Image (cartoon, rainbow, N blue to C red; front, side):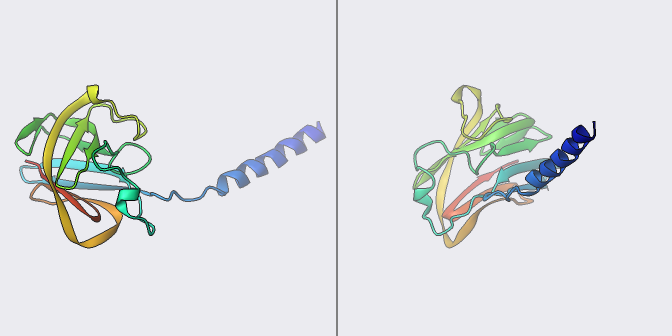
Length: 167
């Protein structure tokens, strides 16, 4: 009985020690939440990858679906029906994907939000919009998503800037 008790005590130390060794993610989680005009709330939760001396074209493939972040799917949640670039999006929670290209980016709101970001399925798309891909003056090292009070959502990474208007 003594040996069994000692075994479990030692095992508990190894378990605590193993859990203490976890390293932070290279792409940490972040979120942004804003109440836009009209009292509508938007919340975006995403992982923030960093360039780390790489070019954006070496990380994402232009013309292909990108999870717009890293790790788990980026989520876009709203408590109210919205109009995004003139198209209706019902209240709810969505995954946010993009198809970046040099001059125009497709922004995708997908109903399948509780998943790893690489498991995109077009059959669950709730809305797709096309917006200009802008060239920023300064480079952004870490992916940054922002929601302004006027309803502009901005996705910035390296010199790529994607903006869309939410009402």
